Image (cartoon, rainbow, N blue to C red; front, top):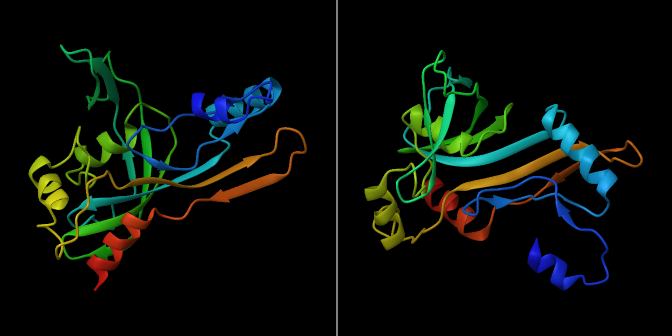
Amino acid sequence: IEQLRRARPTARFLELVHRLDKETSGLLLIAKKRSALVALQDQLRQRETGKTYTALVIGGWPAARKVIDVALHKFLTSEGERRVHAVAEDSEDGKRSITLVRIAQQFDGFTLLDVTIKTGRTHQIRVHLTHEGHAIVGDEKYGDFALNKAMARGDAVRGLKFDRMFLHARRLRFSHPGTGEVIELEAPLPAECEALIHALAT
């Protein structure tokens, strides 16, 4: 947001409507008026926006597993790093968290998922998918560290080097705060993610 403000010095107001983990690519909504910011954030809080992510996970995702309803607890490590883990439903520290999952494509040893979140907890998708036994490819916090290293070296998929997390905010739908028009935005997968999908499919 600071880079954008520097690039547009005449803009009187620029503010992030929501955030993405720095390792996640994709759509990021920015408001140019405070009234728009408040209205859009209200839509996000009420879950009136359609927000879909694409994630590549390790292993074969079970087709019957479509809803993850697992409480999450956010904490700080001794080094001051933010972390999240799944906790029991009745845990005092946990907050109810719901993620919807649909299989987009299956490969040998991997599954491409469409993921929609009904609650917006920190690292929700990453922790939920790992909790289900299918970590996101390239996730340095919650993933399979040995596989991540092999992917980065090019040893895992036909000599293709892949050294980022495969989580992408693909689609966003919301009502324009001024006109009420329903707007739907899509961001294509980054080139390196497309290359990995192509390599897995051939």
